[in-house]
Amino acid sequence: MSRRLLITGGAGFIGSNFVHHWCQNYPQDRVVVLDALTYAGNRNNLATLEDKENFRFVQGDICERPLVDELLAEVNIDIIAHFAAESHVDRSILGPSAFVQTNVIGTLNLLEAFRSHWKNNSYPDDYRFLHVSTDEVYGSLEPQDPGFSETTPYAPNSPYSASKAGSDHLVRAYFHTYSLPTIITNCSNNYGPYQFPEKLIPLMCINTLMGKQLPVYGDGKNVRDWLYVGDHCTALDAVLNRGIAGETYNIGGNNEVENISLVKMLCELMDELATDLPVRPSSELITYVKDRLGHDRRYAINSTKIQNQLGWSPSVTVEQGLRLTVAWYLSHQDWWQPLLSPEYQAYYSQVYTQSAS
Ligand code: NAD
Ligand code: DAU
Image 1 (cartoon, rainbow, N blue to C red):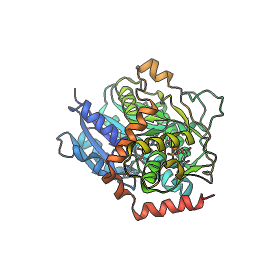
Image 2: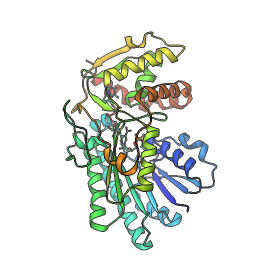
Image 3: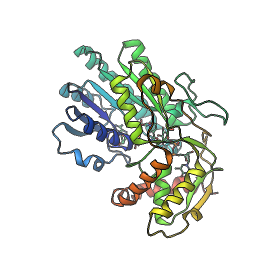
Image 4: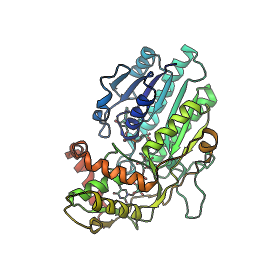
């Protein structure tokens, strides 16, 4: 049976990895990507799919209701996989409005469009609205606290996580109020190919290659649970194929690492794999800078539910995943060089000049 998916944000980091995953594993399905191509969207991520018959790219904003209505009707969509978002915490601290607009209003717009499409078409059981969210909605953990589970109360601390929490609540409400078959996933920190240079891992790889300082916020002891993006895609695949409408699934990597340890691991990999580094050992570039405002101390995910109910577990360790990722950034300079645009440089100086200690 072939399905018709609308994938929002499919030109971004996780979205594009997921589009490749889906098109490879379910070539009979029709995939339409809707992406506004903000600074974080990159159509080149999908270049190898552009000539496929079952694939279509549409540049557009999820907040544009007539466009969304038109796509849902024209392609007769039965699954929305919703990745589109403003996703970077530091940018949300500089300017929260875009986060509320896309993450809250945009999600509401998609829910409303899908609700009227659903009512008009009385879809079968496998009709889905998959909302891809984050572990940051649960707030920050103390060192001894257990990982976030699906019943952990929401306590978002940044404008980014507050906007994602708002969208999660709307998605939940559409299931309870209108029986719209929604599913929410809350995932930990992803890394891997096609991640925009502003995020910790690509930023450290690229700065090392350029001989620039490696800015570690605060004391470097904040902890994140790292998940290789390919494992996130297999988790979302399991959720779409076997997940229950109305449920939430937490997705994590079982890879809790302090930032400073992660950066040191990256430096060692760069020293080993990069032939031509301006500064060696690259750990000499590590510089502690002023902390991020409201910086969450620790995230950790309890993935027991998705493991037990859907049979998913991560397959890539942080050591394996970092090696793959460093190798990818080393061999794809043509992908990330153009992203270091004047706009990106302006953003970079804003964040890192303010945070110089
Ligand atoms: P990203 O910033 O790399 O990509 C976001 C994509 O959304 C871009 O292609 C951008 O052009 C598009 N977009 C933004 N605003 C839009 C709009 N108004 N209309 C249409 N498209 C728009 O983000 P990512 O890291 O790939 O994250 C994808 C999703 O996963 C987000 O919802 C994020 O909250 C969630 N998430 C991310 C992580 C992570 O570690 N990166 C972890 C958990 C959850
Ligand atoms: O937990 C899931 C979240 O992970 C997602 O919802 C977000 O979309 C995604 O951006 C990510 O958020 P983080 O803020 O955790 O990721 P980031 O890569 O920005 O930072 C990771 C950690 O590294 C965090 O503790 C801040 C720190 N950091 C980050 C940067 C960019 C530094 O020390 N220096 C830096 O230059």
